[in-house]
Amino acid sequence: DQQVKQNSPSLSVQEGRISILNCDYTNSMFDYFLWYKKYPAEGPTFLISISSIKDKNEDGRFTVFLNKSAKHLSLHIVPSQPGDSAVYFCAARRGYGNKLVFGAGTILRVKS
Amino acid sequence: EAQVTQNPRYLITVTGKKLTVTCSQNMNHEYMSWYRQDPGLGLRQIYYSMNVEVTDKGDVPEGYKVSRKEKRNFPLILESPSPNQTSLYFCASSLGPTGYEQYFGPGTRLTVT
Image (tube, rainbow over all chains, first blue to last red; front, side):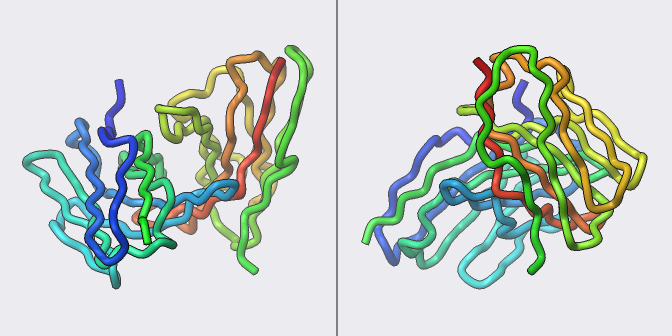
């Protein structure tokens, strides 16, 4: 039973436009959510996070939105750049101990 | 340079031959984890460690062992590898348990025939 779901395996966006990556979760005990970016042949790298007590967090071109009632979060990238092309993983933390549950990932392709 | 290193990066082995994948971090992090990445399943946590000599099971611990004798090292042991353990493995570390992002190693591609 996947507790964190990324229902779009891939997304293609034109350079300069907005990329929106979505993530749904089922466990209401998750208290922290993170987005990681992964390039081929490299480990995932942390991108941005949000606590469950907030509904928005911004860092430069990246904004994460959390809708707790819908158990949904999204990552917005504005403007999208070709270097943003990567696999994006949504992750949720399940309590103390830094145990993270990851989604299956979404491949983002930004076309120039 | 702050980093998490894993060795080997690629490994092909046969069923039943014990192997160890090493993981080391130079950031003095207390928390370390092992994950496996499989297509369509994302990253699944195998084991994690909150400090030296403190380890706990993640979501898919069967067939794996870990040890944490030193803060910087967190090896993953497969006592009797099987083909269903063919996967991409990542080690990760983080400073603390509350909201700290995890830093990942480059990955180890394991094939068990």
